[in-house]
Image (tube, rainbow, N blue to C red; front, side):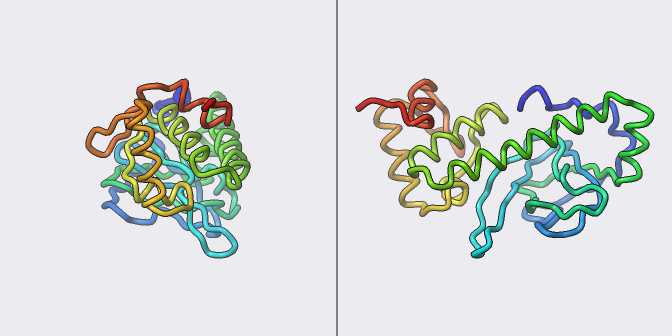
Length: 207
């Protein structure tokens, strides 16, 4: 959600700054929450572990966004967060978050909007799990573009997003490229025909 990006900037001086290398775990699913996080620079991969042990990427956090909002007041983190690139992260403990919201009432609204958005995202993920792979891919592609402005993700990561094989993802990407829906540039999937991708995501495409 683009309108949530950088909304937490006025409160960064309250946070503790941590530098993480690539592929470092920030928090794990099921751990007791200690507070919330803000990504200043880098990229965070949010994953969900199912009851049968399958791990799926459900979100990619860009700079300027809060994450781990569900882990407050000892509540367990519903997902895991891992750095997808070297990252600068600010941590806000429960006590610090309470001080911010007392001194800046608008901060509570920003936090709640971000929390609601994350719960909505989880609900959308669950609702698409049984959809055909191509429909799921279109949905996630749109989601990445809407949130991050691009779809910077390699095919292996995309496969984890969908819970399928890299071969299947590659086949659909080649199909979309041949049909002129997308093009590839370095690691990014560039959407050319957004309406066609939307039609696939909504299962309303013809032919």
